[in-house]
Length: 82
Length: 431
Ligand SMILES: Cc1cc2nc3c(=O)[nH]c(=O)nc-3n(C[C@H](O)[C@H](O)[C@H](O)COP(=O)(O)OP(=O)(O)OC[C@H]3O[C@@H](n4cnc5c(N)ncnc54)[C@H](O)[C@@H]3O)c2cc1C
Ligand code: FES
Image (cartoon, rainbow over all chains, first blue to last red):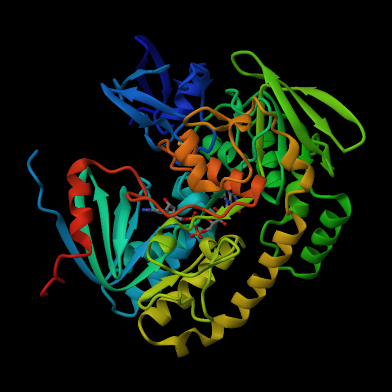
């Protein structure tokens, strides 16, 4: 079993630890704006446990996925800043 | 759309939450021969403290509980969010499908979450909770070489600072808002009680470079695309500390949505239980953090007591009652020591976002309103977090009481929600 997987973040290929949550992986990849708030401000994970909804991203075309509750998977296609 | 017939599960005991409390309850009940089902929305059992860590590296006691859970015969449904409840029945969403659970008894072990209090800059990327930092760190967030400020209140501060330092972060300061004298008294009490839940002293020793500063709190954070600088005060002096990660949280608050939905009596934010963890509602028991914040050991004891009571064998719990009562006293001391100081109510200014989902600023909210009016006039608390973040903050800032619980208590698909209305009207399973 490989301990690194490749995912795509806004079209960019990044290699992240296979055991990481998607939120941790995106932070590792240098993402800071996971989503834009209703007034356009950048937001990123706050609670780390699924309650604040600040870590929402689009995963394989599905919007509003909480990145902190998701484990990375090879080939995952992630779009941030939505 | 086509209505999916819900899957159905019947059990003697249904448990919501697979943290220490839920696990102990499941193990105790299933080992006594009861049919047990455990639902948790997380992908793995273990709760906030155990689930992020691979089993091999968990402390032996934790590993032992998880192994007993595997062997107990309890049915564990991970990834199942309970979205509605009525009497002894639960509606969950599991793998995108509706699931109806009917049980003789329900044990609510839904845990706690962090209390966040708004201050200017708290919405910047790089500002995370204290437990949030711990959860993200365990989930693989890299912190090596990062400059971190840990702030807020409670024993978790030192534990998390130690974990961050252990992962290579430079912990610039640990700012504990509670007064130094209160923290000293608390720590002295821990020495007398060797049960040492959070092992405050040891954690402290684990942060050699950090400066632990009781009586100090964050007044604002500044930055651009991410946090760059934190302003601290001790009430007399104010200074800034550069950092690229601020972990700040004011302790834990009980998660009481499901208990409230089921009509259980709540007192001072906690689910009221009798000496056998029975709530005010028949057939509904509650264990762990919803009954008061006392840590994982307390949750384990309460879970076992709840299981005995759920099986109508309260006598089997007698040997556990003294330990539970000691934890209750510990919880009271914890709450008194780390109660947020009044100054924290005045940190947010008119332009500070209070409701992060809807970007409602403090200036738009009138202290005389109450939670329901704030929702109606500003949408504060109407976003996807359903007021889990801003609700607790507004309750603290304005002494408001929480609004009625909205169903679903966790996000659910329409396919699941069509069954919510039926939950309280449809006949009981004949089985
Ligand atoms: C973010 C965070 C980090 C923490 N880190 C530490 C630490 O490093 N060290 C430490 O000693 N203590 C830590 N704590 C405290 C510790 O988690 C608790 O003391 C302990 O886990 C309490 O156990 P519990 O069983 O009562 O609750 P929990 O462990 O919180 O378990 C509750 C479970 O219920 C589930 N749940 C809740 N609602 C629903 C629902 N509607 N449907 C389905 N499932 C639901 C949750 O997913 C959760 O798994 C932390 C707490 C938090 C909130
Ligand atoms: S970080 Fe709060 S929901 Fe994901």
